[in-house]
Amino acid sequence: MSFDWWLASLHPEDRDRILATLANGLKEGGYTAEYRIRHQDATYRWILHHSRVVHGVAGEPREIMGVWTDISEHKREETLSLGASLNMQRPRLRQLTGPKARFSRLCRTITMF
Image (cartoon, rainbow, N blue to C red):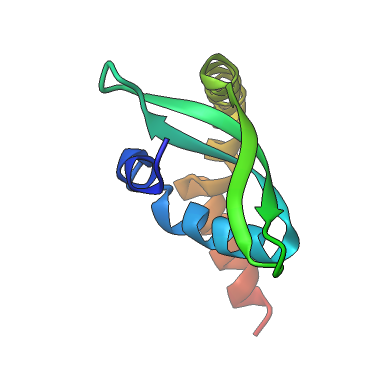
């Protein structure tokens, strides 16, 4: 796998963050990151990437070795769980942010003066 292929396969929304993680990882000796990469079927898969930097005799980074784990299913379940949690909280959020709550806050603010 080449760096050019990896770079071209990164999800556009993850690119800047992962390039910053990579730059820091080169200094620190490795990194662990979650990001999306384009699969051969043209979909994006979430991966968990554990890596370490292999240095040459002069101390320069020579290559990055690591393991990718496909965590797409975990991310999908996480998103569904978060959505369900938000749906359960929606009535309470409406109470806190609806017109009646805003009016109550306005009245409290006015009475403070």
